[in-house]
Length: 234
Ligand code: 5RP
Image (cartoon, rainbow, N blue to C red; front, side):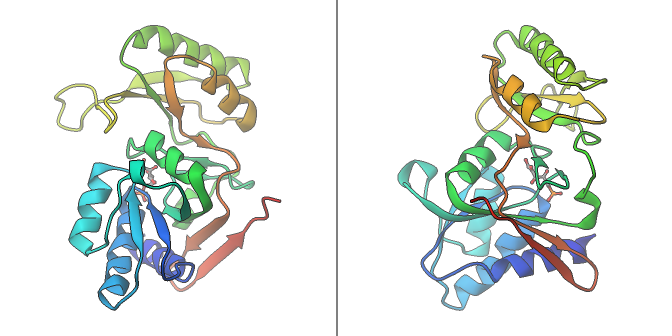
């Protein structure tokens, strides 16, 4: 899938203009984009990146992309990010890399969001990928119960929720913002907007991985070419 991701990342570069402030997403596809953006910067392109994670910031520094702290910007022209799933309405599941809170802050503040994916991310219904929800560690078991109830009440037949662990087994994964991630295995989320709203109303939920009506362009990289879907959000 690397060639597909590279093709998607290359196509996204076509949307970048001199002088732009860019939201830089997180994950392997976003990192490919950042590497390629760095090559353009070395050739004279003037852009400033707003990273959505510490790892992305490190990647941008290595690629030579100038950065500005999210606290210092008032507007972002364009965000380029990956996704874990994209449905037929261009709603997304994000957060496989545990960066969903910062990714959503940046995407929501951007004039446009471009999502770069390989074809494996395209689905008829969201939910086969476990839905990440970033939660405050305080009272997490109570929040988990509320998440389960919110998923069930909005039509998810399955909603088993697990606390994401570090890959090395050292304990719960802690996000850049100091929170935990609860992953809910729904298999299918039939009413995405309802589920998104219900999750947003739970006090311990910092943010959830459903990105509804945020993507403006979906770029699907394939082996030989790319498919570009531009959406109208009027
Ligand atoms: C990180 C994300 C990523 O965009 C998502 O996990 C896709 O990653 P990749 O490009 O590595 O497949 O949401 O929180």
